[in-house]
Length: 134
Image (tube, rainbow, N blue to C red; front, side, top):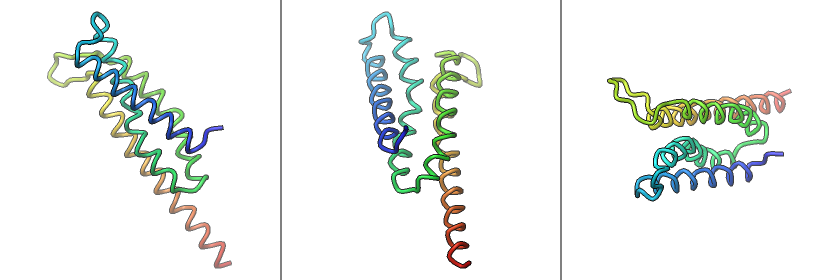
């Protein structure tokens, strides 16, 4: 069963791996696997976006957490898949490289997650208030 603490440690581990692969690829330590290191760093970048949300999620109710978790279960694999398919470098005017796609997917993840958390939290508070009135 996925708990808030598990989500935090998964986000922390994925974030550390993203930073590690990014550092290794920037230093040239990956040698002939340079492109692979960069690809892994961009694919795991979504976990850096998950990290502050996993800290925020500690302060919300379990129903809100599980609603958000349902979204997270399909968004993160989808993001990793889309980033995997994107080219590492794109020479066109409108670039669709792994870096741009990973930043967009991470930004959208944070934005949609905040909407889900806020909407669900206010919905639960409204339900509690209406129960107290009746």
